[in-house]
Amino acid sequence: MNKEKLTIEQVLSLDLPNIILYAAPIMIGLVALEWFLSYRQKKDFYDKKDTLAATFIGLVNVGMSAAIKVVTFGIILYFYNMVPWSIPHTWWAYVLCFIYIDFWRYWAHRIAHENRFWWATHVTHHNSEKYNWSVSFRLSWTQHIKIIFFVPVALAGFHPVVFFICHQIAVLYQFWIHTEYINKLPAVIEYFFTTPSHHRVHHASNEKYLDKNYGSTFIFWDRIFGTFMPEEERPNYGLTKQVKSYNPITLNFHEWADIVQDVKNSKSLKEAYAMVFSRPSELEQIKAKFREEEKVKV
Image 1 (cartoon, rainbow, N blue to C red):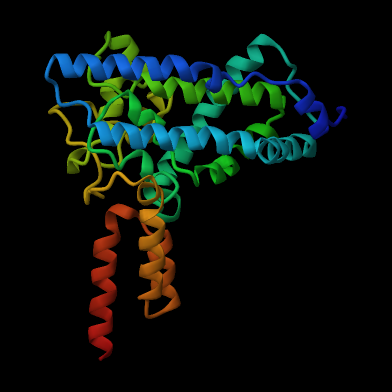
Image 2: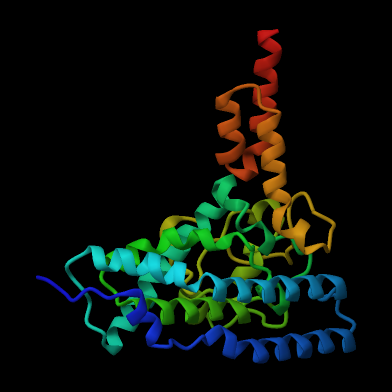
């Protein structure tokens, strides 16, 4: 079974719609509306500086995505061309691809919370102490390296056009779940789909809520893999150790800076490795363990 290999020029010539760019004005308008309502109703959902920082981070990200479009297209295209099979470019291919992408989004998201290196590419999304639609804009400027998690989608034989459209829709889905204005939805929706209630738990810094509800569009991945947690008391948002900054540079790179400092302070390659790749929630215990080992050596 052979298929005609695509070139990057062929894919780019298709002039794929930038769905996120088209949706951006609507999302910004909804943020303004939610901000206005929270102000009128005297709800503490927004912080002006925090929202401006999130918007700036988001706009830079849109620019970066456009700038590296050829690279991301090239990576997916390379692996699509590697395999001799392909899935027909039909309506049902979009359904299958969306579900398969969501599966890999679950694992990419989970790894980004359970491995410090990948956490550094994701922490920007969590370092706000507020929870509102503007938080969906806070995507790290280093997150683009996570494209490697979606190589299996290309290897499955999904056409690059199908991949990029489904991926954009999956990213857009994330917008509406970042709000405190929507409470729990009907049980059937809450069971299968990621909702604002589920995602509020994910953004919480409460110990009971940590490392839960990684699902992107579908929450049933968390139910299957044992990471589901229903929303009970109202969450406290942000990190377990808050950043306390509105500087977009700090918000994007504080974890990378901490990693570099911890590696510099390491007394062995084993410790340096642990400082880069340990589970973030266990980092303090791991540091304490290495300090104890140093005392014993002395």
